[in-house]
Image (tube, rainbow, N blue to C red; front, top):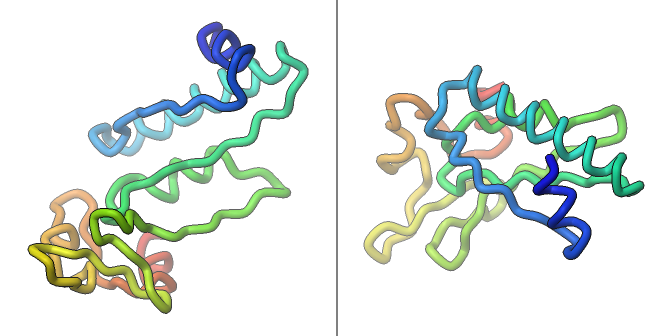
Length: 133
């Protein structure tokens, strides 16, 4: 927490890379809770409200909704839009695409959908959210 305070005394924001996808779900949630607690404490020390922006995986893998739920309050919203256009990961008309070897494919037709831990059956965002929540 002291490091967050120190950085925020000199910068408007801080980015924390966690690689939480490599953790099991319980550990990923515990890490998210620790980050939120440390951030909130840093905000109290600085007299500033801390706002959180979560950056997830553009291939729709990870503990997306369980981690995000740690940061939700009564007045918060989630905008779920997986994208990394520079490498060909885009969402168009509610469907997520991944470019592989120059060809854009629906994400559910790629190896990412068959991930043994974070696999999914659909590229349609509404259906993906229902599947994962």
